[in-house]
Image (cartoon, rainbow, N blue to C red):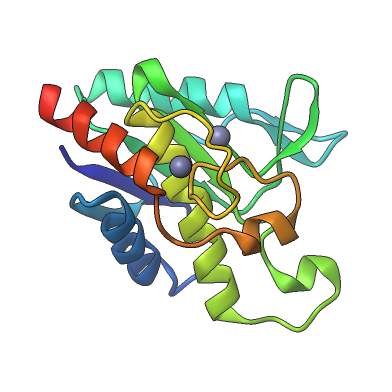
Length: 179
Ligand SMILES: [Zn+2]
Ligand SMILES: [Zn+2]
């Protein structure tokens, strides 16, 4: 098993290597990053957001065409929304192994604070590892410090640690050994 990360050309430059290393370390499996090859779809002019489900369709098509079975995470800079949610940090489609995260609401600048690359790296890492965690079979976790906790705000995201709790890591080990 191997995690593929696609970094869209407009996503924050220079952060893809540290983010990829950290996601790999949290989930305990190899990960590689490259430029994005998936067609960007789902942009809605009126909202200035991407419909995350449409973008997942596009990732699904790409994976199918290239016979990629391993999890694929796309990192984009545009803001995402989803049925019934005015925004989402990210979204995963487990049965096809496709996930997307947006960096739009992960920067300090978005909230009027001073920019900091380390903060941004941490947040993309946590969101990315969370969505790939879904692709590997994990559900949401009640432990507020666990990667699989679902944050509704940036503060909740920042409160999480860059680790899976014991329960989630045992579950993941079980899924991976049963493959
Ligand atoms: Zn989730
Ligand atoms: Zn957990």
